[in-house]
Picture 1 (cartoon, rainbow, N blue to C red):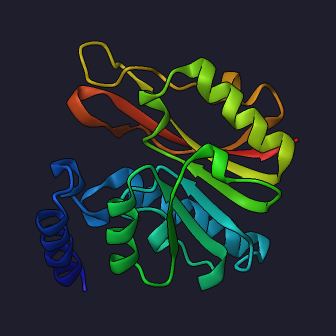
Picture 2 (picture 1 turned 180 degrees about the horizontal axis):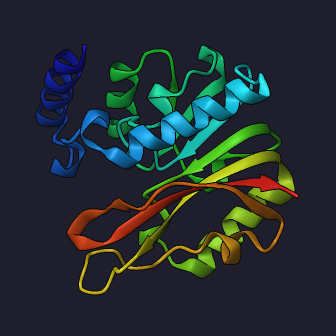
Length: 194
């Protein structure tokens, strides 16, 4: 299955002319595998396999596509329609749409995922958009990654969840340190609503 997924991914990237950084798959990304494992364990512990899971900045579904939630309970948003289309081919059990923060409204969300996303978005904008989501939806868990040692890398911002979430959520799980691109370090953190 892994080899078929990698082949299909490369074919879609070529046919749809997607950015080359989409080439590496879930199997090649430690942070993606670890995030999926953390979320699946959390859902199993809470007995919430029917909870709504939403990922903003899902790319080709390397996280949301592997979460073991029910088919109609997983939605991934990406800014590019052709990326969402390719993700839907790779992961037919997950809904993918073109969109971002503003496309989430009046939802009861078990887990909101924003991993490998916020490091390229202005932190003030991020805070505002996430606070709108928190204010207008019931969100039980939020999954973010925090980067360190980003000097001289292409990462534009170091994301700090406590600042972004404004004290409304508390960290309940923090991963081991993992390597990120260009020598930076990454932690995956799950935040729970207070």
